[in-house]
Every structure is written in C-alpha cells, then in structure tokens.
Length: 218
Ligand code: DC
Image 1 (cartoon, rainbow, N blue to C red):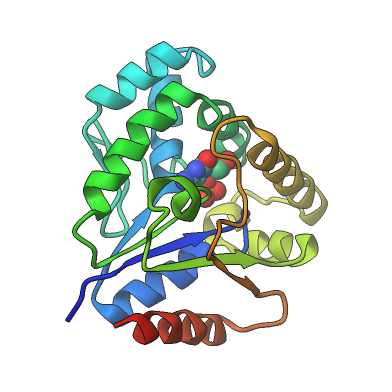
Image 2: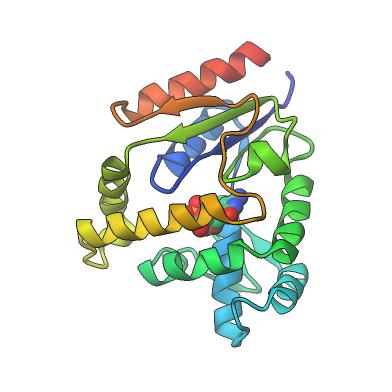
C-alpha cells in the first residue's frame, strides 16, 4: 500500500497531538511532532546558556544536536526532555527560537529527511505550507480560543503545574499571535488544506474525518 505523507497544522490546543497520534497508530504510520523539535532546541539553548534570539548559535546547536522525537519520547543530546519541554515557561520561550529563519531552515531539512519516504503523520504550523507543500493529505485543525484553553488545562503536564484558565487562555492567545505574525513560515491555512473546526467535535470524530481523507488517497 502507498505510504502517504499526512500534514497536520493548526494553533496550540486545537488537538493536533492527540489526533496525529491516533491517526498514525490507526494507519501504522510514524507520528512526528515538530513542535517538540522546536521545544527541545529551546530547552538545549537555555541549558547551554545560548541566547534564544541568537539565530546563528541556536541554528548551529540544532545542526549538531542528536535529536529524537519519535515514540512518545523527546531526547536531545542524551537528555530526556519529554516532560521538561511542556511547561508554561517553555511555552513563553519557544516562539523566540521558532521565529528565526536560520533555525527553521535546519529543522525543515531534518523534517523533510524524516518524512520523505512517507508513512508519516507530521504535525506543526508550517508542514502543509513549507515542509511538505505536496503532502498527500493536508489538514488544518482549529478550535475556539476558549476551547483550546480548556483542552490545554486538561493536559496532565500542564494541570500538574496548577495553571489557571485565564492565564492559560492569555498565554495561548499570545503564542498564536506570535506564530501567525512572524515573517518566516507563519501559521497559515496552506493551499489545499482541509479546514476542520474541532470546537464541538470529539477526538474520535476528528480522527475518523482525517482517516477518511487518507483512505480516499490510497
Ligand atoms: O505545537 P507546539 O505548541 O509544541 O509548538 C511549540 C512552538 O513551536 C510554537 O510556538 C509553534 C512553534 N512551531 C513552529 O513554529 N513550527 C512548527 N512546525 C511546529 C511548532
């Protein structure tokens, strides 16, 4: 059977992670969370004392890094950062590295290498627009701001930090604004992408819709 490339983009809290994971499992595909790559690089820069806005240094760090984001574990240069990258502090730090063109070029190369043989569900902000503009299936998941904040609060990693709904909603809005307005590879609805508003939908319904789109291409 053909091994497709499935691109899933959208703002924070739209359900990309859960949906991408379930779709990948159901199809026997790999699930690649590109947001975790940006988060891991931000974590390592901070750990090494590299200024987050020093694109040359951050891009060099990413070029050298031994970075693994498959199988539910995120590891960079031997550090298991699976939990450490999901904090409110990381949420604030990561848009600074994510807007830098040098770093993005390094990560886009890695993402293309990881996905080019297909059999992959790749989630992020620019997968259907920049990384794989010719992806077989492109989906843009969205949800209302209030619903996205509610989902983020239900996320165990964040709930454990005693986050409050108002603060979470504000942080999500600020991050989305940064992701949508940056000059390089902003979050956008890619040409050919199927827009799904998940506000009133359950996970299973969204997963079923995405799988139907994939099956139609097989
Ligand atoms: O999906 P996430 O919340 O883990 O993403 C973390 C940050 O990285 C977020 O600010 C958006 C950015 N990002 C990006 O710019 N491009 C991607 N392909 C994935 C994430």
